[in-house]
Image (tube, rainbow, N blue to C red; front, side, top):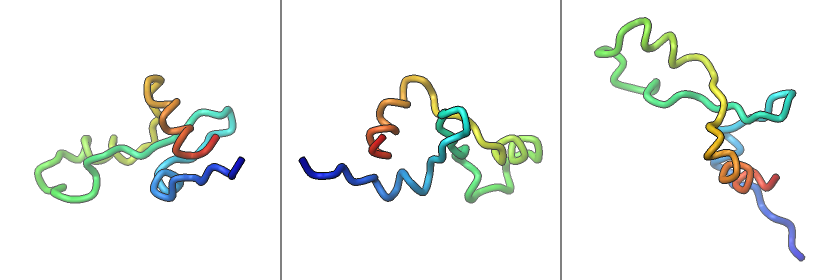
Length: 64
């Protein structure tokens, strides 16, 4: 059986934590930042974890 390839877009967007959770960045931080408040932009800077419902799909993309 052939090896499963990792999705190259997914490997750039997700990272594993030490405990095995999947880290992701927040959306809406790339452009049109003038109308967003400082607080909103600051909170979008931090990493978050992938939702429970999406973990299976992301793991498939990462060939885990």
